[in-house]
Amino acid sequence: MSSFLLEIKGLTKKYSAGTIALSGIDLQVKSKEFIAVIGPSGAGKSTLLRCINRLVEPSSGSIEFAGDRVDQANARELRRVRSQIGMIFQHYNLVNRLSVLENVLHGRLGYMSSIAGMFSRYSEEDKKKAIALLRKVGLENEMYKRADELSGGQKQRVGVCRALAQQPRLILADEPIASLDPKSSAVVMDAIHRNCAEQGIACLVNLHQVDVAKRYASRIIGIKNGKMVFDGPPEALTDHHAALIYEGKESQMYQQPVGEEPQDRRYA
Amino acid sequence: MKRADTIARQKKAKRLLSLLLFVAATIFSIWFIEFDIAEFMGGIPLFLNFLFVDFMPPNVNDLAKYVRPVLDTLAFGVVATVISSVIALVIAFLMAHNTAPHPAVRVALRSVVSLVRNVPFLVWASILVVLFGVGTMPGIFALILLGIGFLARLYAESIEEIDKHAVEAVEATGATYLQKLKQAIIPQFMPGYISWTLFMFEITIRASAILGLVGAGGIGSQIKLTMDLFQYGKTATVVTIMILMILGVEYVTQRIRERLL
Image (cartoon, rainbow over all chains, first blue to last red):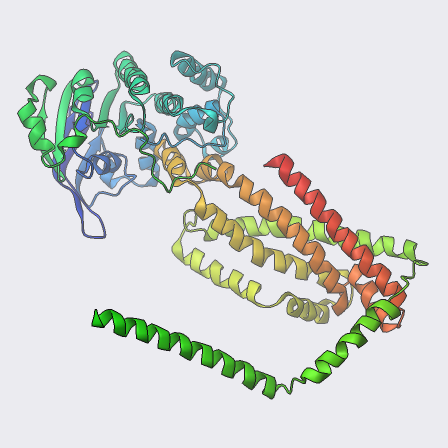
């Protein structure tokens, strides 16, 4: 049992097509750390986050979360680990045909029996907490709206609330602001940062933008071609380092890829 | 340049060859079944005569007698649609690739459903009439089989098309398989489910009209009965009732669809 909240050793992920997304990543995360993972698109940031809660199966290496070996967990253990790890996605990943409140309450599913969760038998306390979370991000009037009636920034705040509803010990945020305009981005990043600080939640957030990473993070990790090439406090990340991480893809460093909705996504 | 020319010429040759084959197949088939174009043309006036003289005027004396078969047919439709949609729903979740518990289950169910669907519906009805005897039971069973074959596949396709990102998010909260199904997949699948089920109801009504022809009950039996007795005026009435009934059902399902979706 290690003293870290999350300890990753020699994590490697090979996709079946033969591409190596991650090779030999070692990473220790202490509780309450706010870590920004930066790197160009395709560097393996998203795969790294998804290996931690095994939405993507790691090829080799070990992952230990709060004393549990995630990589060796069976289905039941994995669900318990996942219930303690919140996740925020680039495309919000809300269930569009359900209400905002129901989407937030999904964060409680991991703590309920299968049947109770199926039939949405959330406790009064869970509902009150979910409403309080929505109020905190300024969505108390949107609670009963369908999720697809919201704007992108609002949807992402719902995504943040869903992750917080889990009362997690760790939040994984995969490009949470990559599809948002600068103003919504600031609101969302503030909401993640403030809540994590207040509740002592550790956070790993993937970001394109070096300036955003420097503004919020207590520690920055740079990933390039599946390898960790930087690990240190934001002050230590010089322009020289940043240039190295983004070598050949410099345009992604500060640019906001606004409106980057993939064509194949349909919101029915 | 030369290469492009050869490819273009090859393409042209291929197209010509396909056309020749198609023409040859048509000519052979006409010769093989001894299709007589003169007889076909000569048959048209006969057919029109039958339709407009023998069928006219529609005999409406027995109108009250047809109420029961119409209600029977509608009831068949409701029962068959409800039962087949419930069974097909379970099968669809087991055979859609994003919800199947195991690949073997998926492949096995796909083959079974494919078999049920590929045996024509009238063949099922005829087999079932032999098994259960003439009456309403074989008709309902045949409609249920038709519904399962049709709906299981369409439901499964709808389930496979839903947004997997939301499902991933619910999975990431530590949800169980059943929770994922109910909280993330079913809400997204609902429009497809309602829409296909209503469509199935329309198909069932139309099919149950045909069912009578093999002695499986419903309004179709009246068509066969009156035809067999050469009471073509009555047949005309029954066919008219059937058309009105189908139009009525289409109208109602359309309204339901507009309301719900």
